[in-house]
Amino acid sequence: MASFGDPLDSITDPSDWAQTEYPNFSKLDSLLRCHICKDFLKAPVLTSCDHIFCSVCIRRSLDLKNKCPLCSEETFESNLRKVLLLDEISTWFLRNRPDLLDKHKPNSQPAPVVAPTAPVEPEKPKEPIRYESRKKRTADEALVECPVCSTFMSADELQTSHIDTCLSKKAKPAPTRPTISNFFKKERTPQTQPDFVKKKSKISNLDPTISTSKLKEKLNHWNLPTTGTRHQMNTRMKEFINMYNANLDSVNPVDDRVLTNRLLKWEGTYSLEATSKDDDQEGSQWRKKYKSEYEDLIKQAKANMKRITTNKDTE
Amino acid sequence: MAPKVSTAQRRLLREFQELTRSPTDGIVAGPISEDNLFKWRCLLEGPPSTIYENGVFEAEMDFPSDYPLSPPKLKFKSQILHPNIYKDGTVCISILHPPGDDPMQYESADERWGPLQSVEKILLSVCSMLAEPNPNSPADVDAAKLWREDRDRFNQIVQAQVLKTLE
Image (cartoon, rainbow over all chains, first blue to last red; front, side):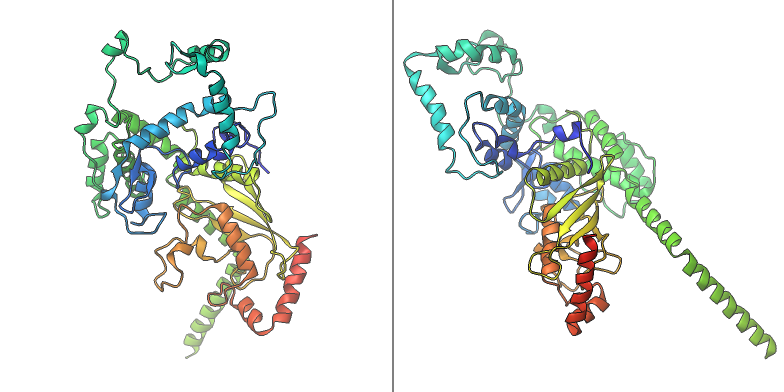
């Protein structure tokens, strides 16, 4: 079977937590994932039937049929509502996941043994939790604040391990403690999007009966290529609409130019011609396989033709 | 963190990883080559206490570029006689049919393909299809007829096919 290098390493999975001191994270890990792409939720939206997916995933799915993939209830794109708080949570988790995994790696002492199977029941966490709280309780008498991240811990822990890792991490979320530099740095309030998004509105879905010239006009308007067949242009425009609308559901939306770039990349990996090529291949294989039978049929037909014409001649 | 691979490829890689990490009994599946994640080879064990028991059947899966929105195609490479498997090996099973193109409303919508289904679920459904053929929607009419009318002969043929898969 095939072996995979890099791409497989970039695929994360809830079972990654199984070997850590806190295998229960696998539950949170799987809860924060989209049911369609199985990646962490990106710009999550809520359907009218109360289910959450990545905005772009559910939009692509609803393009095919207006039903919730989870409960099969009728669902429409226009009813999707963004959930910015969840986007922030999911983004935070994704960003801090490698570090969390690392911190909870079992050290030299044998970690509490937990079944390595993926979904861990909520009863199990006791061991690791006690481990954590015991550590905190012994240090209760002298808690000190980390000057970098403002969390409290024992002086011992701060000096031995925490301070180094905390300092080496530049991207740590800003401390809540007001400092002068923070005061001037304008921080966005939680659950809000940048102002430029507020001025934008969603692109309405593509009318399937749109004329090719109108379609080209639309593509031009969004600076998208107008090359390829009508079908390719259609697919391109549809995907751009999904990406554009999904971007407006994100707590960290990107510039339109970034979207255009992503679309072109998507087109590279998606291969718009895939289906037509496949059909052709199948067709040619079919023709090869039944070549002799075709030839027999043609011979028969020719013979029949001759007979008919000769019959006519004799009549 | 620019994605080098498409959504479909990421999902397929993830499913492959999951199947490798926590294998399901009687099922082995994975991409044939790392250059093309859209073609998988699968090995299915015949379900125990059925006539297919002890057989190891080879099948190939073809994924569309918009997977998991559209279902893959599944085709047996090993000879296998079954009412719901076409003579060329293509499997006819509701989980591989996208909902919407069933004018007779014959199959209920939740048995059909949806992005929440997976390779593992397909192969498990195929296993249960092997155990319990559905004679009401035959793909191979001759097989269905034989299965209904001359079960001994049907079993004989399958037995021979099972032995052949072990060669």
